[in-house]
Length: 285
Image 1 (cartoon, rainbow, N blue to C red):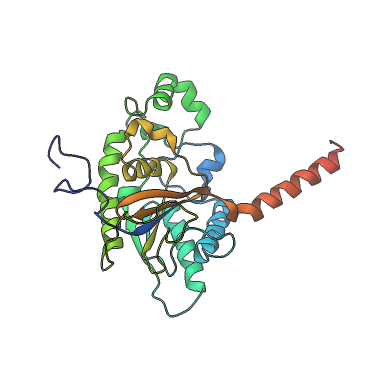
Image 2 (image 1 turned 90 degrees about the vertical axis):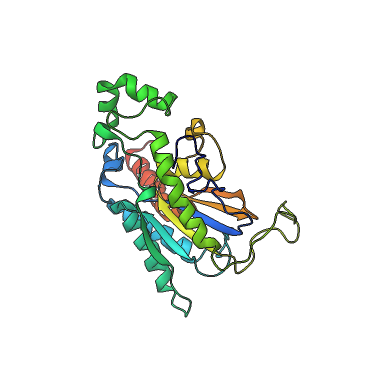
């Protein structure tokens, strides 16, 4: 991309979202990892899902395999076209859990393609990777404070800048969006736009795909999709295996759901029961 060219992810400077595209993108964050459990920064370093993370991924897979079970998710009917995942192991494992749940449904429909996409790997955090949060605060107090206040001006020592992350995210998004638009007719915004009225929402056969990634990189993905400045980086967040749904309506993105985590209710219910049992045993109110 030449200096000064618009950051679209396309060499010709065309809009990131193809004109008239009707499609849906589902964003899924990976499950808990060993380093998250230990309170360590991850960045683009490899570390595996924890036992809890594997269970979270399995529950997310079951939810996405049956998206129209009550309460229905706002996605079209039919199979997702692709399962695009970051090239890191924790997202690969989470995507595999989703693919396994979809395959278990059986049927004659082709299964979604599994696509490893390095462009949506997590933000590189340099020397902070593997360090505990409190240790980072002790050794790099000014840098971590700067990252939290102004992530454009400050990054981890040896880490990626947000502009560098944005530059690799956009081509990855462009490829996924182009695949969604392949062989599907273009739509228009000249139709009802307010939900609750007839004719609003996705058509039954509209294409959709799932992106499996990370909280940090998904912040950048959301800003790119909604054409927001990188200064708004802290505006979006996803919990572990949180699900967000972006409908693209006639080339215009619409946020339909954000950080959907209802599939984790069995884990949360167990934790609540265990806490209640501990209180009963201790005699605390």
